[in-house]
Image (cartoon, rainbow, N blue to C red; front, side):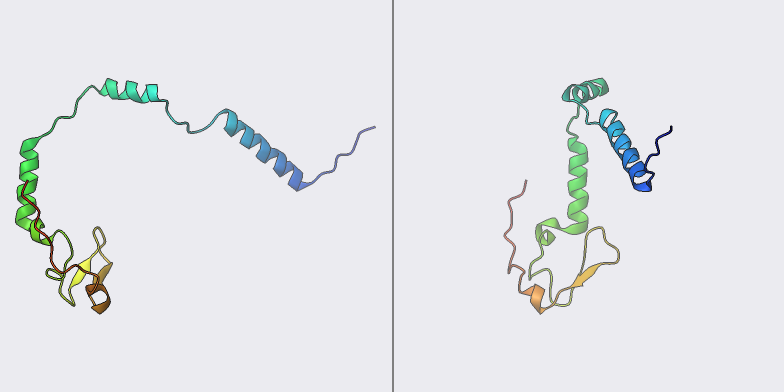
Length: 116
């Protein structure tokens, strides 16, 4: 005589989920690499980073010509008057117009840092 099992959609799905979770536990899709594997990969690349002073000097020159970083590095009351529109870095559609509330948060004057 055949035994009749209680058939329920919930129990079938529960068993299937348990099997899938066990499978993923035994055979993970993504695993973190060990320290030895990372070191071996770096050594395989073989190229050592070296400082490129020519490019550093060129970048500093271009930055000083376009942006005047000594004066415009930080937002101050001197370089951001009331009504000025400040654009967020990397955002094309988001900006902030300086008003009474935000203007009072700015520092009065920026201290000049020594030249490098």
